[in-house]
Image (cartoon, rainbow, N blue to C red; front, side, top):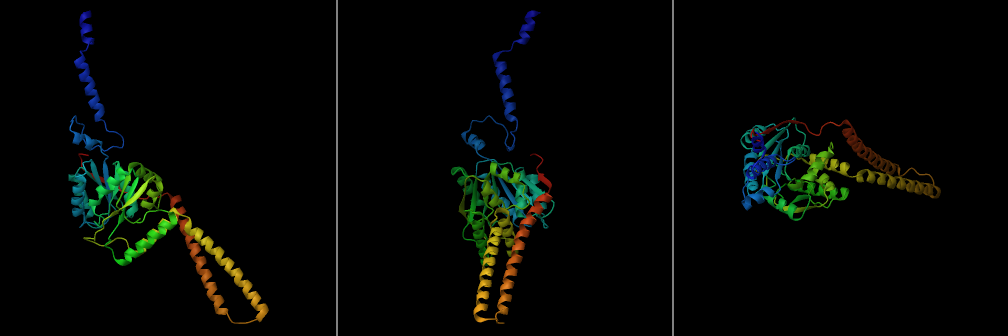
Length: 365
């Protein structure tokens, strides 16, 4: 009886190693927090498969607003580019309240493609809030943003990722060369970029290009900021330790029209200046000081002239012109202060920057 108990308690070395390997396989099968759960655990010793599994995973975030005609071509080109990277990848499409058939097409795509997620927003929030919504869902080590209009070719993505990894950068932006936009749009874009560089001290030449690559740490910090009005390239530039930009190609639109008018660009510029710099209100203060000093000097001049020449009626309309200039400066100053107060009001209300209605993905995910 005692021998039988000893035989039941004892385990052979081969059985122990088998149990240990079984435990290790089960432990390795557990998903790691924040990692992509797109690859199964294997015991292959193929060097190419080992290098693929150790490479950084890639997520591509694409905001979509009424791009039904461009989506089939975009996804075909995008999937071809990502498949050649030799990495695990996913695409996160964010439908920003489209009124055409974009959402229906994306839902059908997500149902049959396990590497695609579709984030459906409750309404149209704008390009940058849509990207923030995509950031909150994306799981890759490297997150690339791309517009859906195909003016930024997906074929430039490998160049961004290579620069990001070889240069150990946190953010790599695209600098559009040979732009295929109307000259009015190009002129407005140059003015916006120049004002932005002067206001926030950023060395980036093209803040309007959404073809950019970010490391996971920067993406998480951007999402954690949770600002009501945020300009993602400028915010990433402020959070990144090392950043750069590289020339990228630019193509003409195949279908549809641009969603950014001149008025939208001006509004975006004002949001950018007041959201990342105190320079506008400082310039207004400086202008007020200059106008006040000029008024004092002009008053002294009129007093001395009265003593020398005597009373005169001429110059009344000149005084009116000066008065209107001062009133214009005053109204402009009130407007600038109002922009900053409005931003404070938006932050105090704490309304969500975006609202996700649903995330559509294949059932096998």
